[in-house]
Length: 118
Image (tube, rainbow, N blue to C red):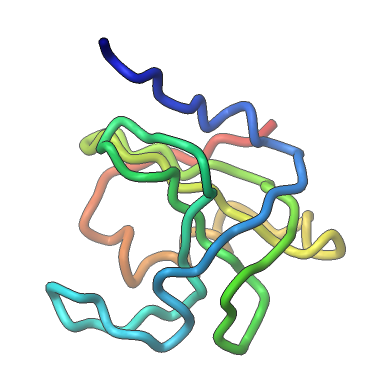
């Protein structure tokens, strides 16, 4: 029986908790580059790649273990089946798509994607 995947769009505009598995300044386990943002996942979800749904946390300049914030966008990779949520503090919900692209470029530069908003 196939396990149903979590629809990333259901998180847009909602408060979510992100568990960090790659905190700010940690190194990518395979490629060795540094994470320029806190990066983690939403527990108890499942993306098409079989892992939990991933999330970038923008606007916090210290390594975190967990973060509760608002999902303002989804980076939908058009050449990879692995959406990424964009999560911020409630006072940062107005950041632009350009800011999201700039801040996530360290990892997203290798993929084609579109930014989806509510």
